[in-house]
Length: 274
Image 1 (tube, one colour):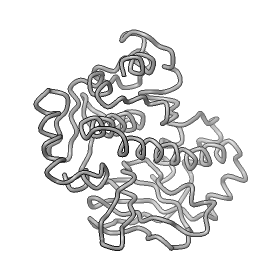
Image 2 (cartoon, rainbow, N blue to C red; image 1 turned 60 degrees about the horizontal axis):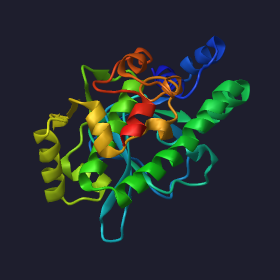
Image 3 (spheres, rainbow, N blue to C red; image 1 turned 90 degrees about the horizontal axis):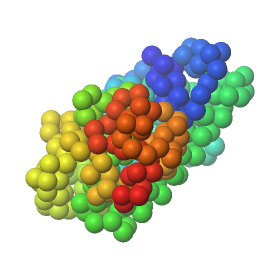
């Protein structure tokens, strides 16, 4: 179960030969249930294991001296939020569960052994860690210079694209079990501002967030509003993958998707529209 989840995550970023894929599937670790709001690690902890999300939803965050929390990453099933810690002496943020979640914990010793035996796997694991920085840069830009409406639209687009690449979307929707408080912590908005922004996006018919599920009615218009260009995710399959780059026209871009996105018209088209 742990190996299969990690294989799904790595396959979003590159291709593994059959022997490498089989080796990842055999990866073992500890399966642990984390209660809602429980932490898996805290800032200052020594990294000894990698975390793979099996069920639920996690977030990485930092807390100020006054207790204000800033979320700088949401993580869905199959994702591995702490792979860059393979090269760190200690964690510099906290990782917790937004809802009751199940995670796989793989010791760094096991991962290093796999990476030594399988260089192709090592390349994708390192890439997964590096890409965290790419995502952080986009979150910083989004929260610093975009309006609340554009910022929320961008977050919803990113969430859907990542879920689509991992095979976790159904009929234009994906799981997003966050509260308005969580959205405020991720976007730097007050609860009132979050509520007002959600209402507007719903009123103009772009999205709806209810009962932990995100419904996207028109991805193209949402991406235009959020100035969303998925290049920074560096996906190799699913929405925004490299096999779509340069595609123009809805038919050609949708043909490249494993699971079509409503209103998605390809990387070039979305970039031009923005």
